Image 1 (cartoon, rainbow, N blue to C red):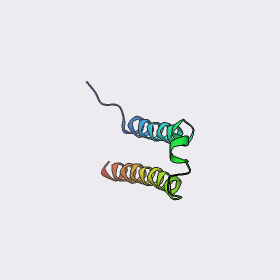
Image 2: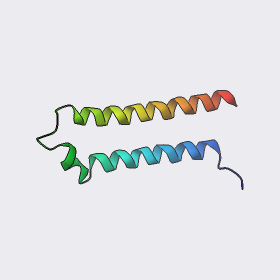
Image 3: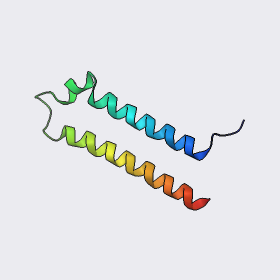
Image 4: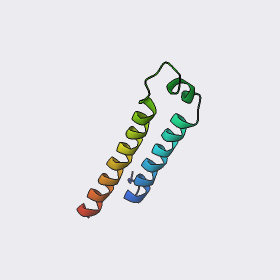
Length: 68
């Protein structure tokens, strides 16, 4: 079975990251991490995690292009 082209796999990863961000930021989970009892920095940790994940995806894409 042939693997999908690199561009399609990269697009799949970006879409999955977008769906994860959507799930975290616009779902019932919003009530959990935005609750009054949580520390003030929880939303920033979520954003930091999303930004770090996008950085890793972009870095992996650049490495894949250099390998070609």
